[in-house]
Length: 298
Length: 253
Image (cartoon, rainbow over all chains, first blue to last red):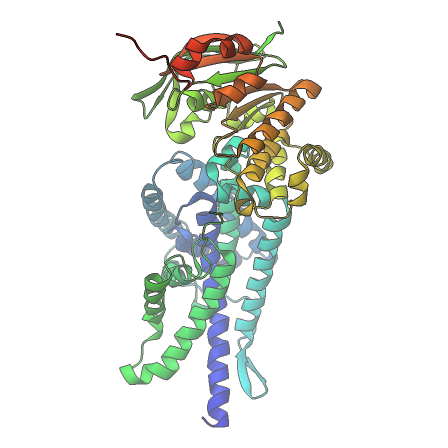
């Protein structure tokens, strides 16, 4: 491989890693809810769409950027509380499949509501982040991707600190560990669930803005759930760290496969290669790279 | 005799709306006493304790009849959270520590459930460490990696963090070495003596339970069948043979 070939490899890898951050962002929304309530929230994609549409519609209506951001965040928190109160609490103690089906239905309701409220056309979303690439030692890096990665990094650091050092965070981890014991200790499961749904709403807003700025705010945005699934399989459904590492891995693998394997099979690998990886992981390591293994002495 | 603090009045309970587990159990727990709840496997001890904390619905069970009164007030439908706030604190069967949390974090959850502030948490934490010095040594270990005895101490400590007035313990001796069981019962007895903590204790190990308890109730198939001072029950060989796993006299024909 010559020098330019090597630079190109680096460039593709970095591009892949940075887009992987975006996958991780969507996956974290899933992990938060799955960890505490065992619910695989299929509506996470619809929440991403709803958040992006809310924000874009506010901006288009002339609301200043920061205010629109605050209002959208408030709406997502309210949506999270509402979902917990009206859908999950009445279904507490039901089987995981029942809960999964409920969130599947919920995703259609949210998408439909978004369509009724905000309409169906594609919106352009400009976050004011430059899209021009810059060059470091001969390697081109997208400014937007780098900023997006930084924002995601700050969000993850914030969430981690919250769960590590606050009392609410400790309650969250206790509920995630043993729901019945948490109930017996006097922790309020409903409050914990409401908090994580609200947190998932905020994560959805951030993901929606970044993805929306990249792809335009449109209904296919809710399909990024399908990008998050292989990430979850690889990282483990209950690990925030796993979601990040797996997001990066899937992002890089996808791009590298597209560039280096694509030509041999006629291209178009990027769309499905992540699922090949997920399938292999399921065969070899079903709980994912970072999925919870039993902490127990025998 | 001291005044009643926790009263079960003809309590009926069932699982899945059909499988009856309690058929009208009545039991009175008196203030600052240790009351032992004895009976064989499946007699309904765990169900009765869960009923007292309103934890049955989480396991698809429910109280189908009767009343539970705490300090004279009907608390049958109070939430588990409200029970803790009122000082009625359960320690579950099988310890149920949060395995992925450290010992200290496990203890802290108990105080959070009671709604204590940071300063109070630090204070109660020191009291629990005084009581169980082993826990202090292992404060930063993940609970899942500690021994069974340490997990039982952590579970009891977690309950104590909620500043209980009435402590409901389900099988604290389960799966533990005899010396550890004695250590745990000595600590409970000390708490009862020194702080006046009221304890309701479900046990299959009737010998040790009767040794430390003031009062005992035997239940069988979801009904109370015997009730009296622990020393009387311990002295009667026929009771031990019939209900508490003693060796019955051979039958002569």
